[in-house]
Image 1 (cartoon, rainbow, N blue to C red):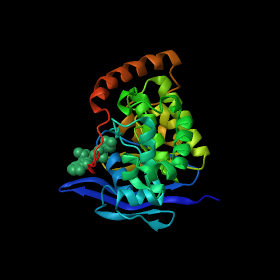
Image 2 (cartoon, rainbow, N blue to C red):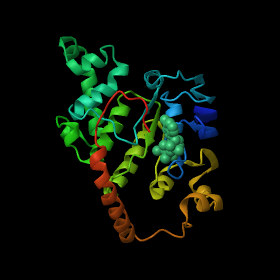
Image 3 (tube, rainbow, N blue to C red):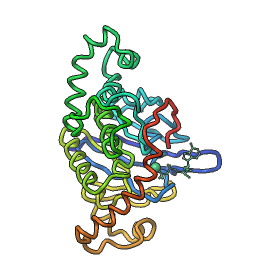
Length: 292
Ligand SMILES: Nc1ncnc2c1ncn2[C@@H]1O[C@H](COP(=O)(O)OP(=O)(O)O)[C@@H](O)[C@H]1O
Ligand SMILES: [Mg+2]
């Protein structure tokens, strides 16, 4: 039996005259990894923002485990949905461990302020949180960097840290917005394994990504957004051979897999191109709520 844990119905998001998301229905069932793909500007991040309370959809509803979600990010987190951001948001001048502890605050009495100022109450009550945070750093492969400042981590590890921080809120559903952007091929593969491991812990995953190999390896189901509309949805096999998807998004059909070497070359070139822009995007975290 499958339980639907996320149910978005008729979601429309308009910005003035622009309709960024057009009547999108999407469900995620427990135990599933669902992919969301589509060209730049298709409305993927906007849709995530509608799911997580950053935006209040112009129309439509979003239910998590049968209950309509409150339109406030911290309440959505509390309800059980955690996310990462396309543009990494970490506390650059806090340590890796502290960043994860901040992610934990929705589940502790002590709260955010206490996590930041580390008063006496913090040291007692947060011992369990620290243990959990360290566990998550082990899980994501960052334990040896626990005391490093977030801003000193390489880009790929910052993305992992965002995942660790999201997991710290004990979500039932994790939303990942381009988790492998700027990663090298090894890191991308490690992230694939990490997402499987997350799913195996009973957390459903909805993931936006441009790396098609990553998406089609990983996902039980893939939905394609084009100009705000859900064009196609189905298994990886169905979606990657759909004529409209090929025409609208991919450009070339997936005929056989390229050799590993060839892929490594292409990916390395892509990664280095992205890395040069990544350096600018690193770790400014603020309370801005207009993430894109
Ligand atoms: N806060 C906003 N105000 C106005 N337009 C926005 C806003 N956020 C996104 N958009 C527009 O919505 C469209 C979809 O953007 P986005 O969701 O970021 O696409 P994707 O993540 O698929 O690349 C784009 O045309 C973008 O410019
Ligand atoms: Mg986006």
